[in-house]
Image (tube, rainbow, N blue to C red; front, side, top):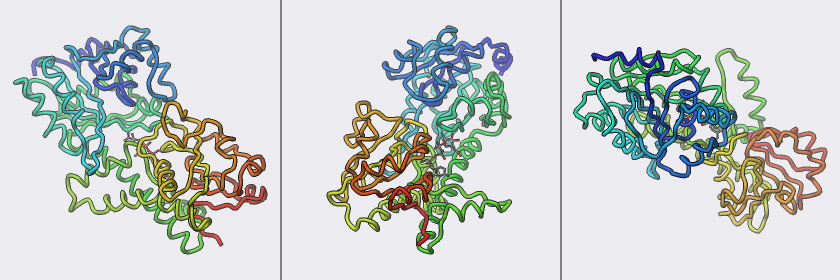
Length: 435
Ligand code: SAJ
């Protein structure tokens, strides 16, 4: 290729278009902008464009508002509804999963099509969305080549997965290592030079399909590890063992690192991405599928604890503490807590749920109660589903008189069992089979 895009990138003389201003696109666009690049952020939702242009954010993530504000103020970030000619295009749109557990690539496909009229020779296109292996070369590349330009010859094409933890996105996006898979070495190198503008972690270069597989392997590994922990919690209940104590001691072994059991695995990543392997190679991805099924059954295991105590849930009211998919985020996607709540309701129980990160008005969940005391009053028991930091200071003695029946099921092992027993509670901890 007779242009030196890398040189322009290093000199910050490029204009970058980021398509999709969600959990990844928005921080990426903002950081590129605050590091001196000219960035056009594009989102198809007019409401999102309006909010960001006002220097505000539509997502709760620590530190995000500050960096977006700074990016807009610098005038390096401009947010629009449509792309325009740029040197670099970053696609960071969602890849949800269908009911039949297949990756829905429609957003990736339409983002690719939306830049067709703007791509020129010498440009770089980077896909960041988590995708099944070969998406870059089998799906994105043919779309972009409808321009008549050839990937790796006339324009550069790479896949670079986001690997940041919701709740710590701003820190991890800068400090984590980064993988960049190019359809050619030059594509990967140009990607490296671009991300180097704000990434402090190490940057590894590989090919596009390997990078796609790495991303899925990481989340699949975590899913399988949590599935083992969840299965151990079921075994512990049978054998009369406290799984939390057992895991803690097992993890003292220098080559053992078992994750924590809980009510199941949620979020839009770990509970979704392993299916992309299963979809592509069902006969080979057997362990991966089984782990997904184990984790999806875990909300049922939570309800089993309630049935042990109450025999029937019909007509009983329970207080759910926490509804989001994990602690200290406001994200409800694939939340196992929601699954537990729906199961209780399905069995004839009533639920009043409190979550410090959710407001009933905004979420239209009729079981959500904005006041923790109201959620606790006249209930038959508490089910602690999310270990939000705020729940660490729950006071058993103050709570006991509010309930009709002092019972707590802790699915995250956050409470001090003895303190709650002393306050007169019946206490069950998920995976604590001590009799
Ligand atoms: N969970 C457990 N036990 C544990 C750890 C987690 O039950 O020991 C549950 C959580 O409660 C939650 C779910 O698993 O419901 C997933 O939470 P998480 O914190 O493990 O991960 P995510 O989905 O928020 O973010 C993951 C991260 N991947 C890895 O750590 C390998 C993140 O780095 C990725 O960028 C992100 O997926 C993504 O976007 O793919």
